[in-house]
Length: 278
Length: 276
Image (tube, rainbow over all chains, first blue to last red; front, side):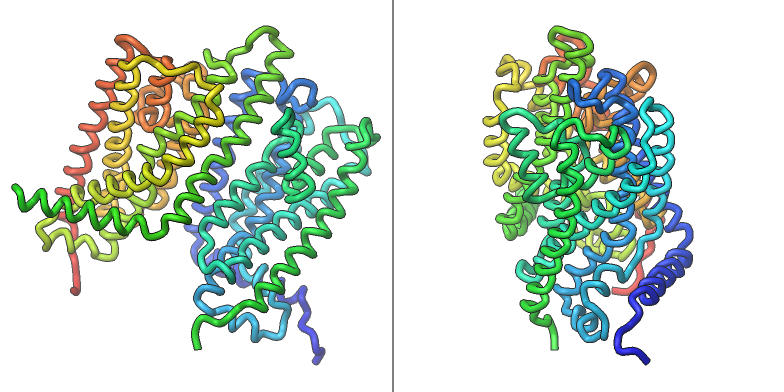
């Protein structure tokens, strides 16, 4: 028997167990998937309405109706992946700390962050993933520009980078409940911060917008999450401005940096953890 | 009569004190609620700049200029502060399900009256704590407002806010009372919240909706929870239309008071409690 557990096999077991649990309550599963999709459709309706009135989101930005739908589809794909794999777990993590059940996770012979982060997989959130893919295909068919092979290869890579950045932010915020006890406001904070990632970064301009864009690009890199992959598909790869070229490179660095930072916060949180009972 | 007033006063006082326990978290949460506003300002800025290039001078969307839009969103936050009732319907349904509702049956307290006082207390505390953040944000964004409307309009605005509180309360209470029949109302509540978010005017001014959609949305009571008070303040509704709007709002309030009372009355006949 080997010393280390096979992480892949553990992950597959988590996935299987979650699926079995979901399929036990099939009606609930369908309602979950259906209800999150209805939010998506309502939102889509809102943007259709906006583009009834304006041809472009910001003068000269190039984000027309279908370009923005590519952006929106990317947001959907990334968010659904985060929700499927991490959201419930990060939520649970705060609870584990508060109730002291984290003891059981610490005792298991596997990396605690891995165990805590992927324990439960929310299959019903993949409904939005499918909607995102369909919307992406539809919107790409409607725009004149078609991305080349390099862009099609890089797109999923940057989608994963986006997921990794959001995950880092989420797990780091959840870990702070070790120090704060309760973190309801922090979750709201997460929601409000990621709110910034939902629109093209070009809309943040002017004396207030520019500093805001810098903060959410370089300090808390949520603007990169959707912007980099979405631009990848709707714009030619050859850079027109140095920014077009530097941003994707920075996105890789930001992903590595975010993951490392969240790992560090997680480790510090575990060191400060004092079991609640026993 | 006096004894009853004393009871209500005690309920109000206890609820006030309970609400003030987590005031720090509460004030911070209020300020954060304005954060999506920042994105809205930039989003509509971008929409209007795109429109400006396409159409030229001083673009408007459904009669709203860019400034009107921002003012509108800020005002809907005020109306939402009156009309939103977090946890009311689900709380009532839970009380029905786990039997807590028995407490109102054996004690000489009217359930809806108690819940209303409890909400009033929560809202009062909320206004005291939120007044600071609200004043700050309104002050910072004062240039987006066309200026103060006349006293009559302000009076109508305040009246529509108070009614939006009552409408929000009784509408959600009615949904909660359906718990007597369905036990679990979370799916129903989800649909309600979805419609509320999009068609009360919280997400966008509902007069933006074209054709039949706009007419339909204007017919349902949701607009009085966010859109109507804001539209009154901005002078979008005035004259006889304003008076009519206020009467219709009052009509909906009365309708849902009766509906919730009826649902409670008939719900109790179905209800069976076990154990102690």
